[in-house]
Image 1 (cartoon, rainbow, N blue to C red):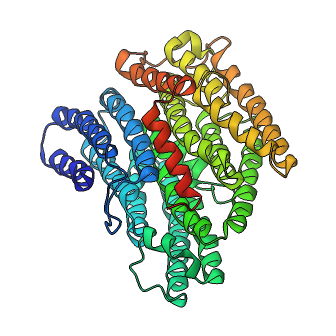
Image 2 (cartoon, rainbow, N blue to C red):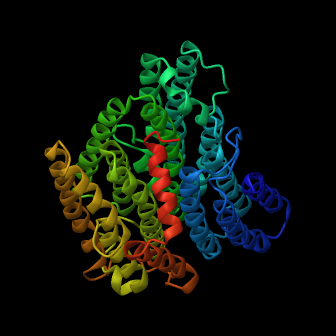
Image 3 (cartoon, one colour):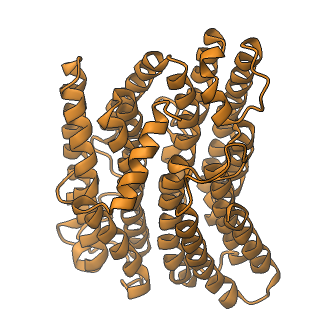
Length: 477
């Protein structure tokens, strides 16, 4: 099943590249997404039975992340056919090819049990998504793509150096087994602590750049604002999730080695910095997609802050990974619809959204409320529990800062969102022929419903998997 999840999207990508018909090429995408999602569900039934020496297998942590990515990908795949129908001038073959290539490499990242293999998959993932950012073929998208590639290349170089440092820490400690995560965690106490710490710092910088935590996020505002909304959803819910997983694998080794306090201090610091940075740049933000980019910076900060607090907060940080991915899909796809309607994504051109595109307008409002932690949506559950864990810990001020930043971000986002959604559409703005349709809104409704369901009910199998994933993050084999 491990190979199935990797080979299926690659095979579909090859078919999509070879067939001449755009119609069948586009239909192939949702079919592949459904088959991949079903494959993930089947694979998750045996996530705890893989041999410890296997280089490709889903454990609880990788399975949780793969389930999130496959769900987001399926939501996006049902949106893509209607979106590409509005963009007949753009090359569909390359778009579908890279879209499916992303899914294959994401499957490899989540299943790989060797840090070197994870690194290769992450770099390939970057290359496939770079072509998607360039989809609009204009000077701004060229600039965004080059920023994404150049800054991402620096980050992945740091991640490679950190991986080499961790390998050297094993060499110094006399560990001769293959550099597989299970082996490293089992013999973590033998690893050289100075080299292990240095390796974690470098991988935090490297994979933190891919996640887009501050101040390593400088590629994110341009990439998210210049790419199609459906690609933004894939970046925010897929690429960042893979980078977070790669970082957690190394964090778990430090936890098993008894160096968790060192790692937690770094995670908490970068988490709060990301939230503060996002709050500042959201104030009076006039570009909807750039605002969502800074929202992504904020939520990457929430993720690593929760891991840094540890315990219950770490478990709900993993839960927040799913909550953020689902709601971000709603926000980016609705932002894409609004952009198509107004031919702009900036105030004061975009006003009265709820009158011109009522479905996308209401979805944007509900998505905004969900992502800022309003009940009963899933982000409320995760943010509430992370805050509770921080406030009940030894450093009360960490929880207070966390809540202050959440409140400030809510106020900053509401200023932009409400101005866009409410009011009267500008009479000076040319009306485009775009109108909300079922294919362009139904996937958003589905994602929002999933975020709502997770906010009130988490099935027992998912709860058990989440518990085991959090235990693994904190160094338990």
